[in-house]
Image 1 (cartoon, rainbow, N blue to C red):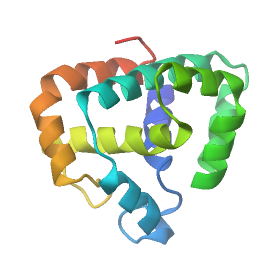
Image 2 (cartoon, rainbow, N blue to C red):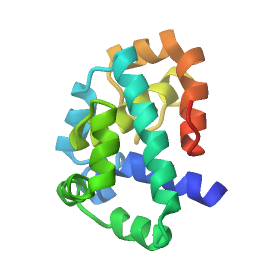
Image 3 (cartoon, rainbow, N blue to C red):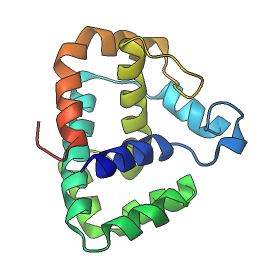
Image 4 (cartoon, helix red, strand yellow):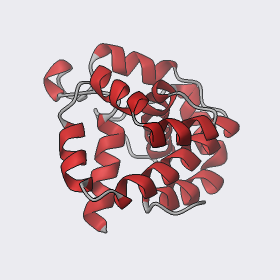
Amino acid sequence: MRAVIVLLIALSLGAAGSVAAQSPGSGLGPDQRNAILGYELTLDRANHLISAMSALTQYLVSLPDFKERMARSAKLTPAERLAQMEQDPKTSEILKQNSLTARDYLVGVPALRMALLSAQGLNAPNIVASPANVAFAKAHLAELKPKMDQADLGRRP
């Protein structure tokens, strides 16, 4: 189960970017970095992102080709990953239930995750968060971190 969690975390961070060569030290291309920095977190959005993340984790882990699917997805460009999410009916349904688009999810989850990491004092070159999102995460850390931890395990918060 730990390997699944690590893979899902890597994919949610990788979902916003592709290979590290795009932007040395950060793992994000300029477009992905700007999208994350420009994504405005609110409590409502954060709760929708976490709920969708939990449901998508449960869905993906239930698939018989889960490992192969995750390995293929990790190699996709951001545009290909977006198209893949939009073409999967179950993924689209989960996102719609949470008032999200695939782009909202692919940018919002890494924005939320990195803001929470920054709010906990973890700062590294590959962690990108706007000052407003870090302030938001600090203000709501006690509420959001346990929900995010549960979602990482594929459980409903």
